[in-house]
Amino acid sequence: MQYKHLTIEEREYIQRSLWEKKSGRSIANDLGRSPASICREIKRNLPLERFLYTPRLAQERALKKRKNRGRQDRLKNQTIRDYVISHLRLRWSPEQIAGRIQIDIGKSISHEAIYQYIYHQFHREGHGYLKTGCQDLRTYLRRRKKRRTPKGLRRCQRIFKPRGSSIEARPTVVAKRSRIGDWEGDTVESINHKPGINTLVERKTGLVFITKLKDRTSQATTLAVIERTNWLPRILKQTLTIDNGPENQAWQKIESRTGLRCFYAHPYCSGERGTNENTNGLIRDYLPKKTDFTEISQEELSRVEYMLNARPRKRLDWRTPLEIFTKELNKFKINISIPSVALVG
Image (tube, rainbow, N blue to C red; front, side):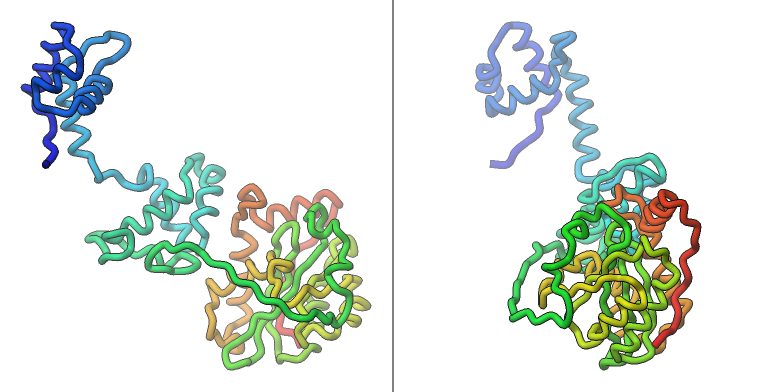
């Protein structure tokens, strides 16, 4: 049976019946309607302050609701839409945009609404074709998926034989992120096993250093760590957590030259260097896999480094790593500037 909206005549009959003190079920039987439909109609249009059903106002309200049905934009207004689109193009995630928009323009929106707005540009939520006059914003997302799908999880195990001190011996204060000066390091590989880049991330602030490597030797990685940390005050060099790869075998030299205490994470446990792994993923957003880092200029790496350090983070209450790092430096009355990316090795 096909549902039909109430007509103005039926609403006028409801008004007369209410004057006659008829029940909702009796009115429904007279009109051949469901009692639930009549009860919802009366409840929607019977204001408590007047307790008076007005069929004309009820009809106008129903027509207005029907006219706007399914046509509202997913985001509140054009100002918010412009902010969302411009920051998606800066490779910000919907959650980062939702967290930062309150700080920047005093508006609020949920990250779920942003995802819905992105996928609403397509018929059938990404399964169909792009709607007329819309743009494909999925290309600015980290995963760039055509449709929204649940995430999976996998685990691997291997016998752990660290080259130096194990992460199990690392001070427990490091995991709390309560102090500045605890770093995580890794190497991002180039295409065809060519020399890549070294990344260093400070755990509390999320500040990242991206350094181009001249070759794939442990000497190049060691020099990268030394060059990017030698300007830091001693209080900003506490620990360095790295993986057990061959490029990190010269940990004794790093400790003696920088003052950092090196600790090795377990194999296939990327969560033990989660800050670094997440940052590497962000770098891949700008410099995707199969990128030949030997052809990437120092200026381009500097630009990516700045973009990441000026990117708001949820765990920082939507402040940027640069803002938090500067705040931490001010606590110790340290006045220094961050050097740009350099070619070392």
